Amino acid sequence: MIAALVIALATPAFAGIFDYESLHRRLAAVLGSQTKADAVYDKLMQQANGYGQPIEFLVDAFVNVCMASDDCMSN
Image 1: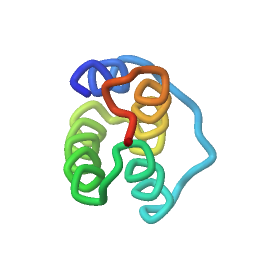
Image 2: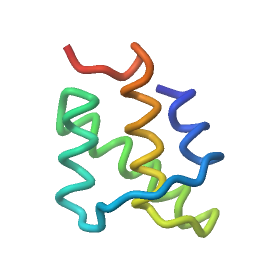
Image 3: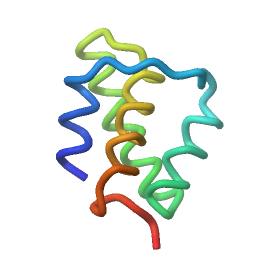
């Protein structure tokens, strides 16, 4: 999950998601729980604010990396 956060911050990504609910749904679907989704969202939001990147792009990159790895997949 740490690798996904790092890649999400370093990789600009484009997404068609722009509201809080859909961002959380995507994170919860990948991480398997709303609690984990909330924690990751908060971290990504801090990074988005710190680096001036849109939260939508960071969430999209995080989800893509999680889907490509076994670290983040919910089972």
